Image (cartoon, rainbow, N blue to C red):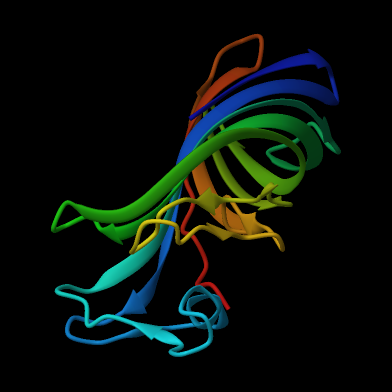
Length: 193
């Protein structure tokens, strides 16, 4: 959801927020998780843990609030634009299975980050249809304590993106005479590589 207000013919301010989630499979039911971290935790005797009683995932859930400005290049029915913003991101990393309501470990935090945006607005009377790209994602450093066993602590020192690194989407909005718009955003998250 976003709210925008034009302060000059080609300059607008925006405030938006959203919820992003992604996950990756760690181990299938009756399978094992394998990593060098597990090998270290077992004093180099085994690189796997399990078998798991259910499919087990690494989840990253993030809520964000962002403010910024955008430059609108034209005043016609088709309005290309680009912008930048600063957001605050509340994230939670979980290892478990949400459907089974089982978790092995969890941690959370708060971070800030800049972002770059670009898009095209199609203005039809009081409606705006927007195609956009949202680039740059905050990197966080989750540390989960007592994962799988007491004393097994894992820290992602290389960092993990709290949201997908790029997002492409469509927004539909309504504008008033002051060109204030309220948009509902749909951001399909691209597959992780």
